[in-house]
Length: 450
Image (tube, rainbow, N blue to C red; front, top):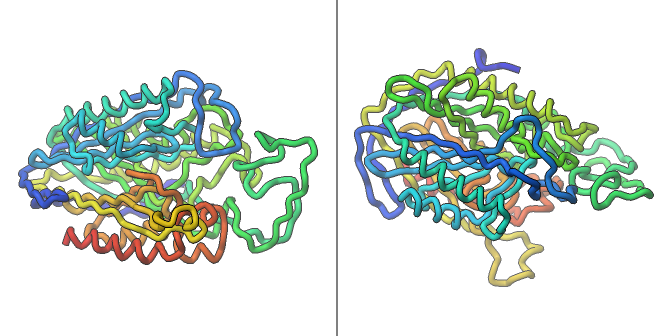
């Protein structure tokens, strides 16, 4: 569904002022530079895929010509830099380690590195504690691509705008009737017909009306904004496209055992073909309660990579439409500001008995402003409604919430969801009081930009 011509907001970016570090060091510049690079991180052999406990074996091959990449986009003003680094995988662990390595290789302060993953469930995860051959290749590629982006810095022109896409759907399905079947509450987590719980004598699972389960909820809300930042060279050539959208990478379910870039990989491939020479970088949003509208293993759907690719091309067409509508401006002066905070949130009551000294969850948070563009990070799976509130609080025209960045604290449900129940509420480490505390602390962080 292409909605770009009818529903679009476009703004040229006006850039002024200073760069403010966490230690209150300021830099002044007359221009903005940027550099982009990507490196192939597709496993060459079997790896353990993440996202679903249903799987019991390593990966077996790759879907079509799909590839996984590490992507880096570096901005610089007056010698001060910030790096956006994304990996097309399910998760990154040990962020301090990776950011330290990138900082050593590039000279970019670790606190100015935003390292995230696209949360692709058809891919492995990366942890420095692992010693597999693929992890070694991942580390080399992650460092090399950021170093290369940093070496390619050149003056740029910027513009930002947004469109809309409905490839996503709210995933908190409310059961409407009492039922009994051999299907479980989550066929991608534990199934009687596949994986480690497979049995020749399945029991009937009873479900009651009113409970919340993972599944399509067409009437439920989502954040459908497709936010685009267009970055051109000063002579008008395409350099990079930042794409922001909130949706899990779960169109392929737990029965899929082949590597794929998922819908976001296909989306990035699509826009790069539309605009030769451009580099795409997708930055996942507040997708904690949002799935693709088709999920293999749920609601009767089976894994079908053709459907995955179609979803990617659908949102890719919207991203391309917004991109074409933008007219980048050359900034006369640049203001690039980075602020960070470790926000403390209360831990779930059931976890307090594990360690009386560990009653809070640390949430490392970064906020970046470049002119009238802002990014706020969250280290986990934030519900979309909280993400929209953060975007509404920030003092900029175009605000982007980056989930799954610089940490991994798990799910962050909005407060009202705790009374409804469901998977995310059962899995979270955070107490129901966390949302108002978090919004108060984020508001304080954002006041540093006024």
